[in-house]
Image (cartoon, rainbow, N blue to C red; front, side, top):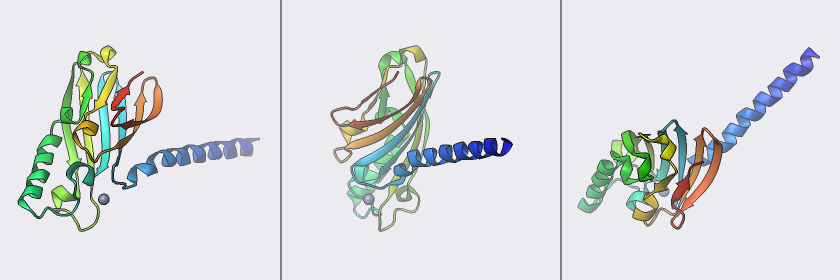
Length: 174
Ligand SMILES: [Zn+2]
């Protein structure tokens, strides 16, 4: 009896772990045109981790060579400091971006010869959480090479997976 219970517990634990793994591993895939977003919303606090190939934002992923490319990298770095350039919660919720953190080989070592990714951690704090109805992925409008954002939303009402696209940029909440 006791043995059975332990085995059951182990099996359940194993299932949970593999379930979580299955849900997270695909974020690490590097496919041009695609990006991944993990969003958590709790009591008016939006927290996100956004991962994308740099190609989607810059059109190249190698260390910048020309003056134009160097400027593009610098411009992107500046834009990333303000999450409201990339994501827009609906205005009525009165959300303000929190300090963001981002990392990419292109910012640190200048980039390799292969592919480069961006990891972008951002957030918003909303004054009127009850008014929070949607978040628009402005990226899909501003960056022509970005076609699809696989989004996983965890909120008080549960967990949901949504694919945002150019003609469907708005993630509805609730
Ligand atoms: Zn690439």
